[in-house]
Amino acid sequence: MGRFCVRLGDMEKEQSSGPPSLMTSLHEDIIIDILARVSRYNYPTLSLVSKHFRSLVASPEIYARRSLLGCTKHCLYVLLYNSKISDDRWYILRNRRLILIPSLPAMPYGAVSLVGVGSTIYVFGRINNLTMSALAIDCISHTSKPLTSIPAPMCNTIADIIDGKIYVIGNNYFDARWKKVMVVFNTETQKWEEPRVIKAGIDYNYGCVAMADTLYRRDDDNSFVYAPKENKWEIDEMLNLKDWENACVVDDVLYYFDCSENNLRKYDPKKRCWGVVFK
Image 1 (cartoon, rainbow, N blue to C red):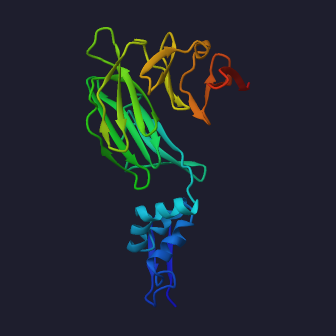
Image 2 (cartoon, helix red, strand yellow):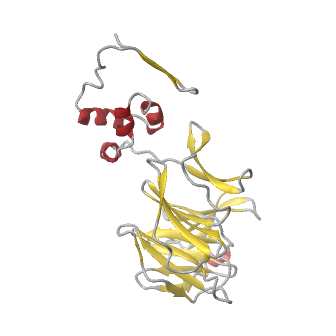
Image 3 (tube, one colour):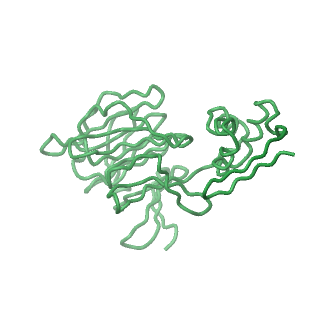
């Protein structure tokens, strides 16, 4: 009877000759159906079994099957500063540990905006003082590819997505008054729309979130709300009551940690009210 063993760490393999296993003799569609039910965390180990398995666990077909079977899982990706190279590096949470993803490029420290769309992370960042870059990270293969150039000179960017369109807002660094400009990237067509000048607010960007098909952003002085269909920015007086930043949204509710009061706050745009989650 054939024997196959893998010792993780030094990746030594020992395999003796013998008849093919029952698994490999099955029809490929059945193998995909079986592998789709296995946790994605085990795919790196499965890819060591054979070249065939390696190609299957990296194929779009297995992820489409996982979606049909309801076997998809959320994965946490973290961008952390690496003092050795003075850049941010990508990590993924696996088995309660953050694991470095060496295949993904380093990001400029503190100079990127991130938007997750399905299994893709879109990154908009400043390479240097005068150059902006945009790229897409494939979370299945852990590879990246550049997008077409951002059609406006901008820095200090914030971004979020509504109906498949990513709204990237930043300051025009060629303007002495640092006027705001917004560019829109269509994730379906993979194309940029014409830049739009924003007359509301000219100060530093502290946050941008999307809730109920509406965009919210904050600068030094005010919080603004933007409905894409109306293409109009307005000050949100209720959101102005708190100096929110680095916020996230869950079920169309904004959450942020208030460092000055040492508590987690939430804002419900439907009820138009602030609340405290815990102190």
